[in-house]
Length: 408
Image 1 (cartoon, rainbow, N blue to C red):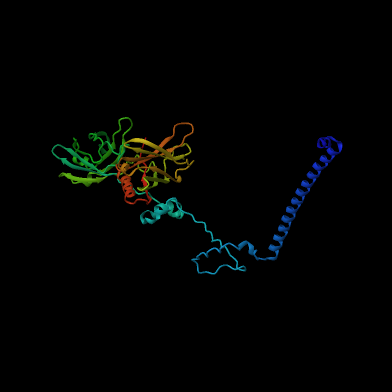
Image 2 (cartoon, rainbow, N blue to C red):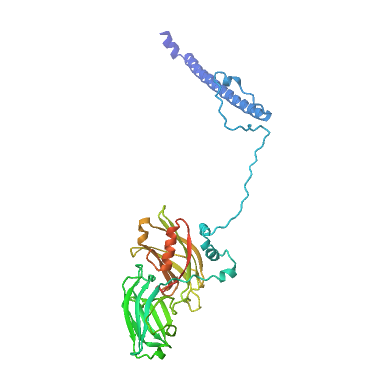
């Protein structure tokens, strides 16, 4: 009863309130002291650390390593002494030199192609560059016989066969036939049969030029032109032979072998191209580098052309991929030095062809075809030789000039 009265009295309530606030003040004071002490310790440690760094002292607190075993010493394989405090390290930068490399750096390992590519990439003087002449193309040869029949005043010409003719079709073959004239007479034209898809055709056909006195025959020139038959466009000339009859003994049958030369209508007319081939069997890649063209036919009124080169990758006569070089405006001797990589598996090389065409860019009408060629295992002798050289020298670029042919 007394306690209840004490609690309910005003004095007891004041005492309890006082004790409550007293405890709160004590706790706040303790917290403040703890905070101040932590702040002072951190400040002292910061000042002591700065002082140690300035004084250069390396003395360690022994308590830090009292119960810790020393770490095992690491083996050093170098016999050189460690760097001391006063030692300095010098980093020397190597001397830098600017070097210029050709598009085909490995090509100059071949002595046969060194001069041609050096001229093409501008490594030789302008005088030597202007004297560069593309190699003549091998167009094959033709075999025929001549005999004059005096009693009948008839010239007998027998066309036997031709060998190593160049391919004119995308399939890697040609459809050759022979056209025969006695120049300067152009009215009488005789032709052999067309041999389909044959680069070594055999004709064995005999032609008679009747009512030709012997003296008149001696003034004539036998003109034989081998052409590739095309059903949908004009026939493509392969090569020709001009044999003066005065230089042949016609009293008996004479067998002749003559190498074909480019037709006068197209010889040197379209221009030539220098390109490089490189085969990488391990990566199944064929790289073609279009280096430059020379003496291209002018297609514009200004007497110039805007040439670029188009390459079709074909497999079994089916077009797979097309790439193009940049356009060189107002020039007949463009320089490209542009490379193209084609993925070709090794077992597919025997049926792979690359159709290379030099085009003239025209903004207002259809682009004109200047000329071209076909690279592959069944192309013309010149192109086939280039292809075989590529296969015989893997991972080595092989450059060669080619005469452009009529691809229209």
